[in-house]
Length: 119
Image (cartoon, rainbow, N blue to C red; front, side, top):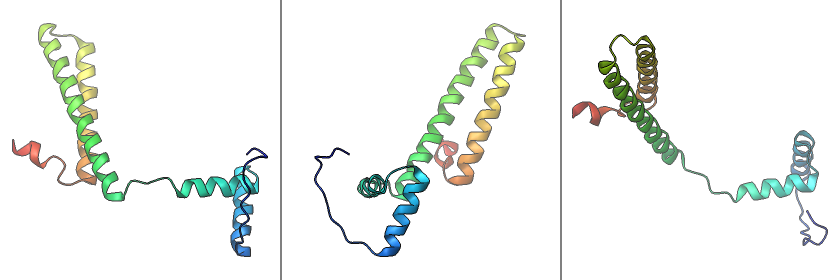
């Protein structure tokens, strides 16, 4: 902080001051910098848990779809170049990755693949 920044005198309970001092020591910041940091953090808008769940579910579904598409491309290449062991290994890796993503998504979000399985 610059010396010409405005000052803000604030009364706080002793326990709170001690917590700020401890946090400043742990983080390697001055007491003032720690207090400013924590005040700034309190104004950052957070994503509600429900919204975060939707974001994670959409991300997992997107990754699943992407890897399925890439796997399909490899399978098509393998059909043109039969007995290509390198392609077979890549396809096996994609199969494992797709399976893991789906398993984790279904564990976290039981209805994640319900619509895609019905179609």
